[in-house]
Length: 389
Image (cartoon, rainbow, N blue to C red; front, side, top):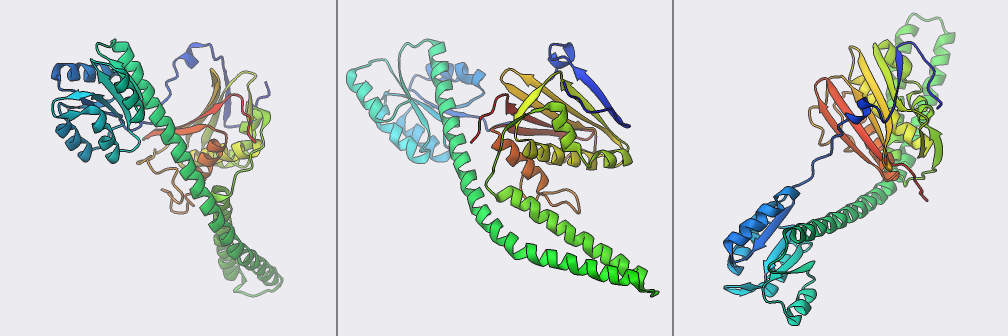
């Protein structure tokens, strides 16, 4: 394994993935909305038993005993899955399903009946039912049917979200190209003019030179900050061009921390590596190093009085887990950390973490964060083998 060379203020600890320390890792999973299920059956005891059987899936179940009651619930709240008895005291469950879907078009429908006929089966298919369960049905059959329905709905939601994000990115890309064209040339021109004036002042022996030079340095700093913001904005909105290569985990971390180790040392921040032995990653080296660098920079800035940044990389089945954890001040609200232009720092661009999220998404991975005062952990999950075009 290629590992980073030892340096002052930096510690290396190689972890055996089979060892007890690795076995004790607990990874935080981002919370998702609780799934909702509507159970429509005039047998109240059965409906309650169905709700109880589904509770291990983490769903919130509502019960209706008639068509009228079910429609009232559907008008007030949308449901991920509706389990509908075909025979109801005040109407037909088959006719109820499309009315439920008027309020929640992507609801999954599961019909149940105690008198199955070919007509029932044909009508259920016509109402795009997920399944038709015959009473009495086995509990495990009910649970697996609802689980599969929820999985289909979540998968469809992820596809829709992905398409929406891509549409937004394309729109932002067009905006970004125009913005970059309009701003970059004036920025470069202003920086060049400041450089010329600075050199002229250095050749003159005037009492005011030092004061003017100080103001010019401040102006150059602000212009460079604007240029950096523009560059990060372009990274956020331009279509990705990911080029996958095999790179050693240690080499990738070294690349990500280039330029940050001195900053960390000045602030008294120790950087600790916990790398699985002989681990290579299939990533875009430039993009992933940029993402990890943004996360590391964010962590270092969160420890102005010193602390420890731990970078851990390991495998977990067919996935690679990358974690960056610091013991800094924490993030009060993690819900918006990946939003463009969101920043808790007075001089922050608010684009760094958005850039990191996009890079991870381009690798078909996920990124999650958990934070409290004294501990902030970013967890990146990537496919161990990547094939992107």
